[in-house]
Image (tube, rainbow, N blue to C red; front, side, top):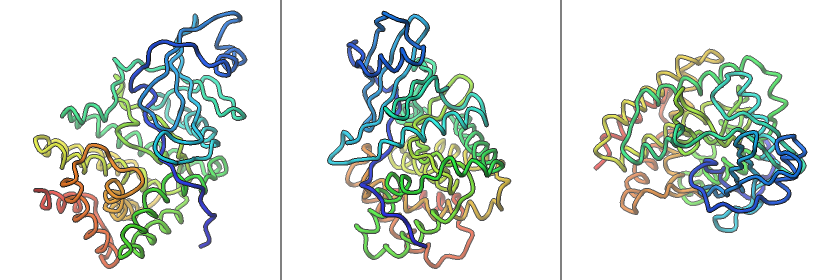
Length: 358
């Protein structure tokens, strides 16, 4: 299968409400955008704050007479190294948010306006006091198994309801973007840095790109999920793609697996959260045999574990010795994936990971 050449890789953005800088003037293009969209009154000067924490977008919290708004514009060059990403990813993020809001209302912020030419999105503001970031909760040792189950359920419903609408595929024909934003920085990078694993890793990439089944978010990470009062809210769909839903599942499970190493006092609850998310997700699979999807997710999982220590976007919270633990385990499992017969059960992988932990 011939694949289009990928532009330079970059990760997707962080949540649009991690912390706020001091109040400052809203950039004029943003104010003009809001005014043209009818979200800012003539002559009105809104209160505005730049939101810190993201690396791939310029994000502002704006208070107007009509209410509070978040404005987001992607950066061409990310705030980490010499990384570049196509600006058109903003268009597909807005499409994902609108599509998913129609398929399953209440699981993502509502888009209030967008300007594809300027790559600007205005969306509803979600108060962090009522919508904490799931990653922050996990790192603080707060493991909510019910929330994990709801993440699996809602993610599975997004995939199931989109899979039932195959006409959506044309709206998310974004394979070059997905290669640039996910395949290259994760899978291709570890293939280059671990040449002995390259055949196995590139086969995983080939399999992933060959699955065209549902609307994929592409960055289902605890940093992009808010623990809302009515359940999880998904953010930052810059990697949206019509492709393999197993990628989303494995991507999210990976973070729970890694935090078992980081948080030894929470290993039991994290196992329960992993299992609850997986079980709730499995209950939604109706577009293909569940065993087939879970096999793909189970084979992707160790490669994504390795990518989060040796890829272009490593997790920041693991010490060098902890990264070595992940590396040793993941390398062995990726290599075994070449010959292990299906199914490759994510729960079996989690059990093996438990035995490997110091």
